[in-house]
Length: 430
Image 1 (cartoon, rainbow, N blue to C red):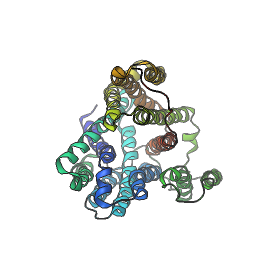
Image 2 (image 1 turned 180 degrees about the horizontal axis):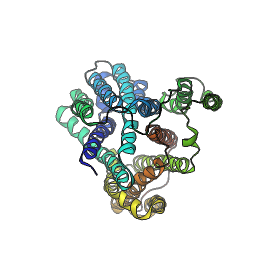
Image 3 (image 1 turned 120 degrees about the horizontal axis):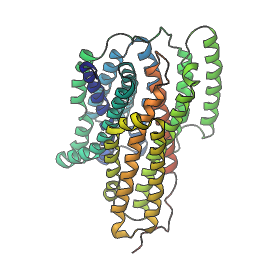
Image 4 (image 1 turned 180 degrees about the vertical axis):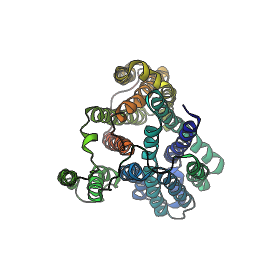
């Protein structure tokens, strides 16, 4: 791997860490923020979920812009926007200001992340690309581990009144360092493989409407917004309109945002669906476990959450070496890792019903370690194989589609799980 490419990758990983640790650490600060600013349930819902909403909405337009006009300014601008919004959130005196700042931060993160995928696609091929994507996933795993720990430590040291502000400001130094590094080392101009394209603003608007209709019902607090049935009907209408417009746009000789070469690729479609369902299933499985341990078995939040730490550790370790799996086994390795994930879920169910209370924590930690390790082995190789089907000049857009599918899957799966109660009557044997 050329030295300059290594430096570029490090800059991308710094941006990924900045955006990922922010979300991971914020959850620990929500009770303190609520007490300090008197935030109501609706505002808290927007603070927590609004980030994901604008993140998902920004990714595809940002990926399209990066492919057409270059990634450096979008990358640096997204990090700068994210950092400024963090300052606003951390110094806010009203809860609604924090909510608005979180929306802006989500948009900033959504602008940056497609550029990361695009840069990796532009600069790396084969095994090096798989290693770069593995490093990206490893950073995500490390952020998932450190976020809650750092957030808890900050709150313990600074206290509830000021601790939540420090947590929100944690990413500011990373942003201040990353922006000048991006301007110095990231490639300037458009990628060599890019082609001149128009933005297809109507197509982007209709695609945003579809995404909004899928995500917003799960972001809005209960009782807000139109009746539930309106959302799927509007999503279908927007999707039909999008299909009609994109065909018309393509017949005019221009490149639609829903590129036929991209969506018509069987490898890309299957890989995206695999990533989509696996991502949502992993998150919802962990959430079901934590809710079950607390609601049914009466565990404390800290004890329940501690069972998920081995999974995050396993994910980070496996991601760092997943390129070796891809190099040796290709798609078969991804399938084997998926089977491992399924077996880990089955083992978790068996453990919950058979292991005595005294050993339940240790047994669940083992199954979660296997689950996280399997996910880590699967995620980056599947991404590398999927993005390899992206046509020239569409690396950022392909990465954005891949991430949006995961964001939608995570939102839907989490919403469904939180709407279900843990089954009663399941308790550890004495």
